[in-house]
Image (cartoon, rainbow, N blue to C red; front, top):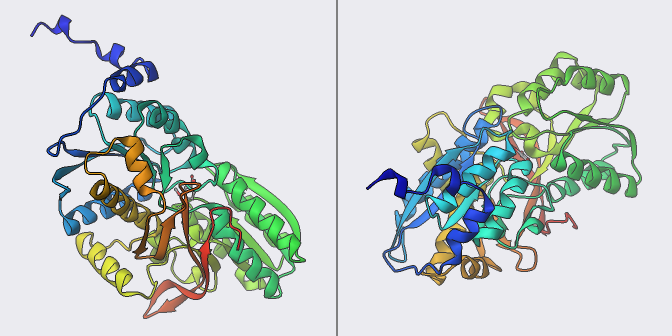
Length: 395
Ligand code: VNL
């Protein structure tokens, strides 16, 4: 064919207009239509562990549940957005809609990336499964978003209550300066104060190239009872290193927060300094259930040296949600698939979870954990449970 008959790549990518035009024509799905899942994740850069974990979990789901569902062949298309470039995430989402004609968009390692892709899902009318990013407001950005990960208020509220009830009176707070950090800080500060606690200082560190040393020195000088920390997955190693090097633990200061700072992906690398950290989180690789034992064994077998973390279950359960929605609506369009997802309930490796039909967000148990050495390795050992915690963190 004469190449001049082909629309130029540039024209196709002119943006949302092109995406909308491509989907303005009805697309009839036949039983043989492949189920194409477009995974957009940070596979390189500072948040590559999130991409690696979610990719591993999605591939494992395919291996264990088969690469076809309701007669449709499942195809995973994985693209790297590097983690820090929302424009790249948006462009990839557009390409996946227009060129790859994906059925579902999925992945989304960080909040700004999920925000960037949301209008593409809305325009193209394709479900967008948020597997990692945790800012509460995300599902409000598109009626096609469904979340299988967690929210920061959900994972922060329990540890605020624990601190207030465990003789912690004065807290120094440190969060990463972007939407999920703000969510976490707000939840902690409001709930801890309401329970009688005092916040000495609340500092925010940049998302790009953070240097935690000066902040941890300030935390040490503050003589707080505890240091509250939220940093996104992957950053915990640097924070724990400074906490250790500056001798904060030796002063008797407790580290508390949502569980991102003691992420299972890096916990073994952190080692002994993590012992004694108290966190609240929806998933621990040490969660004691038959589903989780099977999951951890299979993930470790398929990915030697990798311990599955909380982002991995966002991927695993995202695949489950897609498979189950397609079983209910084998040839469903985007809207029908989202409808099928609403209210769905199942037992994940993390424990019971459901998709709240009103918010399209996840309702799940959140556990209090203490990092302890077990057989020479640190694990986040759950010691209390809050059931069916809402995305708002209301307990
Ligand atoms: C986000 C929140 C990302 C928590 C994370 O890891 C995390 C986010 C990359 O919403 O950007 O642990």
